[in-house]
Image 1 (cartoon, rainbow, N blue to C red):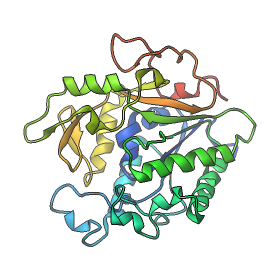
Image 2: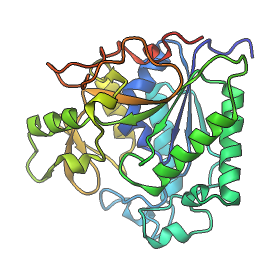
Image 3: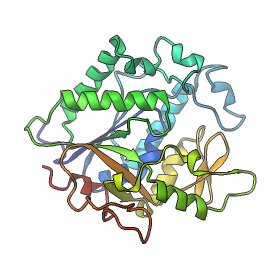
Length: 305
């Protein structure tokens, strides 16, 4: 395809809203810099808890219509982020939100957790994603770490199929590709929590409420959120059944107030190292040594072609 962008990024996420919660600034800054951004979402998020009473009847335990509604939220978030190429893995409805580990929803015949059990659904999911990788031929791929960021079975499955699909599908021209996992450095999380003033009526967040943290030295890249903070918040606002915006932060249905991040941080899973990203420390904490924060997502492509 001669008219496709020279630089291309693929992001793989489990549910609608994950793209905006974890890497909105990265996707928006990449799109704004001319990078072709493709987003693959693996499920419709059918098992999500609904914020507010007006739409509570959409939930899985009632009308079970939440997935379709969240799809419209996702399309609006993509518009805000300028993500023009969005795909549902293997087509909308092929895989269903599994819910949290140990819940009955994980036994649903279409539960996405089955994509991680080594059975037929694993091959179907990997093959579907590999077809997207082959078509888009991205230089950079983004997904979760092996623990899924906070242990959700669908996030873990998304990591596993992404790693498998990327390994199965090398670049068409034989050039290298980078595969990154979005992560949260421990010190940056602690500093953000300590500095954040919890609004009245919400629970104060603890570091463990923000998901698993990684050692500072394992962070290879940090994309600043600041220039894209308004865009990120607008994208989060699109996911109104799942996210409530607060002053300087946001809350999910658990009403735990979380601070807005300063950076979106990544760990390199595969591919050539980023230039200048080898010193230990957290780039997301002022005064600590570490990789020089990137000026934007385009720098994730440094040295690639």
